[in-house]
Length: 61
Image (cartoon, rainbow, N blue to C red; front, side):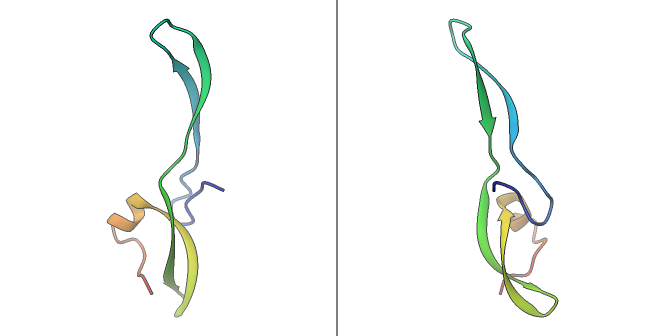
């Protein structure tokens, strides 16, 4: 589910490397918040990342 409805930011995958250089798969998820926003004049629940909230890309209800 970790995807922003505004900028479509999603999870990223990579490899975690420990101090002894053992490698394992890792997933980084964006900071997603559930907020009520005004969409086409009606309040709607959206899943928005914290970066879009800070930059005022939505108008909150």
